[in-house]
Length: 123
Image 1 (cartoon, rainbow, N blue to C red):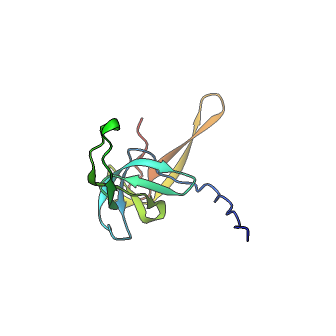
Image 2: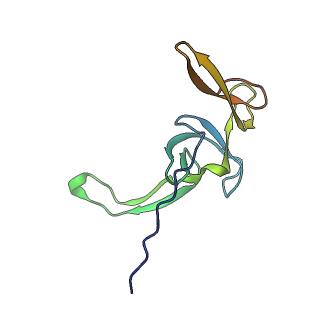
């Protein structure tokens, strides 16, 4: 009997970027804040510092200088379970977009805070 291959999911539009500060709003780590370490747009998940910590059992390998034991590391968390923390009002907020006209007839989208209107993008 043949096993049906699953189609890859469509990439999810994620508003978060690396080094953003986010707050977890649901799940076992609700209330924790951390910095985004990695964004996976294909699966819609984020790797957040000190959030969803799991224990990884590793076998020692002297050839690669790996000590064995139990190591703790972060596990990916769904992007829908976090909100970005605004640097201005220091609250977890939703993201809005502001479209600016740039020279040459081009436009630039910037992320802004829905509560205070401050820009979330670094210059």
